[in-house]
Length: 252
Image (cartoon, rainbow, N blue to C red; front, side):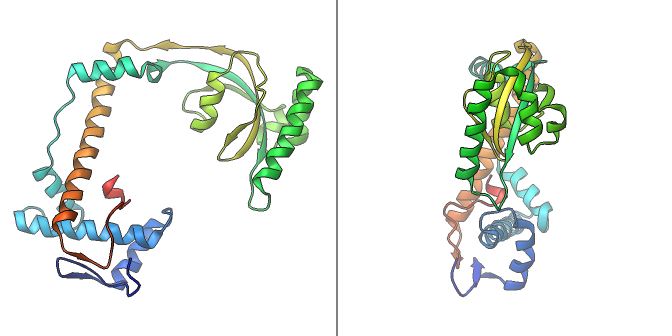
């Protein structure tokens, strides 16, 4: 973004007041101001396009009207759904669960990750030498998770109940196993042990077909919308903002 803050879209200026208001909705972005500016540029482009086409008015109505008028995506046919099912069979496993115990070394702003990782590794080595009976006591002593009170036990964990990076690790482990390496997640470092497990069952294609078609249709719509918005950007006279690599939610 240019230092003077002046952004225009085909001659229409996006002023600082409008930009400052939009920034409040982008606080989770790596650069909230840049993300807000990109959002406003795209919405202005769509509003201008809506007026040119004679559809919609302003705001979300203009966005919906233009996209409905100009973005076309084919429906996912059965062959495409079948290919997706064959390539991603693991996504259609249901009723799987695994008993999990863990010891969490929680990341906080006041502790450096390498220091915490090293400490967790030391406890893992000590636990491996002490044997299974020591797990509950060590969880009560060291874990930063509320499950420490139950000796680290999380019970039977099902898919979707934990963060993806934790789930991927525990469902890949055999039953009754202490993982010989730490599991790293957004929360910190975990020592993990599994108990009993049930691999679940795989949905038949006929059971999964409607869900797959919905996923593929949504993905196709996202791609087509992204391409259309990039086309609008390419046709426009945009000053004060580089839209290459834009990460506005409208381009996701």
